[in-house]
Length: 598
Image 1 (cartoon, rainbow, N blue to C red):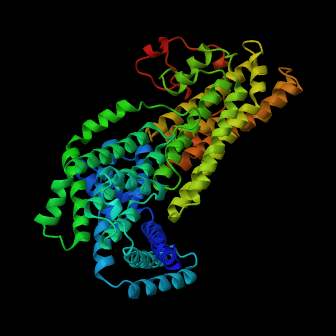
Image 2: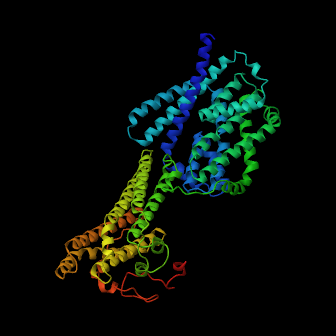
Image 3: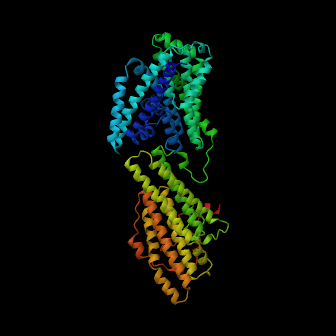
């Protein structure tokens, strides 16, 4: 192989590299320019299956990247922000939208002189990037200009390099079976992760006479199969919904490929003879690419709802043992990632509340989910000796670490200012949750000692008083999380009582010591418990404010009336007995629910 041949081989390879780099810069520029707009557009424009397919087609045609759209859809569906049927519709439409690459290359690459446009675009983009600084929109414009220039220059280099290679004899490959070229197209696309690059190279080879039209058609059919690799890799280790979307992508492209191969001769006759494009093979190939993808949508589109049912049966839902939401969504899709982050912090809060209730020897299910009266729950359940509190607390800390690491990954992505603020708020909420849990964990031993005191003593009454206050606080936080926004006022009342109890602790300690109700270590424990319960409650209310935007100031009236009569806590009320004078009971018109007996 002589030096000229080496140059001719390097030229199309250089062109391919420039084309792929240009595509990447265009993609990054469009993502920065759109910010969260693209994600919101895709999520909000998929109310019906036809709308979802249209959205997939248009966004892919503009971005020139079906892989990016596929990964975005995987993230939105995995985060629960898009129904499975809509995600499948977007994927179907994206396959038609990706055929815009063939038309772009056919029109620009072989009908216009590109060097005069490409070099100024690259130069302008590079210069603008130098002066853009931290300005997001200027940076995006620079990437767009440089990406467009490199893309055009890459097409020009491929066209020139493949034209020179046409002098070599490739006719000995023309008799190979069509399946060979389908496999080549699939493998090449899977390797370089870009069906657009495979399409551009195929069009150049066809224009130069290196390959025949049936060979080029087979290569594009294979490219359609190879492009599913990106989605399948993106779904590995993901939640079932992501696997369902990836499988839908594979099924659509695989079935479409089979249809195209079955109808290969009629389709070729249609675009070359019927459309009279024998002298314009590049345009004929672009038309062929569009036709067989459109055929797939026409045949398979009506079956999307049934396909969704089939996919749900293929992959059963499962829950990750530690994180439930952030494992579903890559950090590279900020809108979906922020939704997953918020859900995961709510999950962390619920786990922390269950942990706190267990520390207080209360059944979390009855406090958080059943409508049992809190005062009755305080007396009905005893200790839980088999619970490993150290392991539960360790899981909370590990989940916090996962959340913080994930939030850092999301923050490293291009974000809108409001998105950055949301991340900072949610991170602080996660830290406050675990700190509140730690405060209760640190006084666990004090509660155990209080519990060992004799019934009817001040320490035993204090223990039950703390348990009632905290249980009511957590119960109302849970109701607020579930959508009962009017719980904010009630939370303020409860915290007023907790704060008042803390204010009265010193006087209570002095009286208890004077009357020899408890000794110095017990007095120290009482002050420590008071302080920790108050601080932890305040941190939990901060979390409610950060996550739900509900400011909960303590009510003056609640604080003024918080002089607790501990004697009232010595004996539990009878079942169904009302206690209107105390805020410790939640209303329950039906009395003791049947669910508590189950």
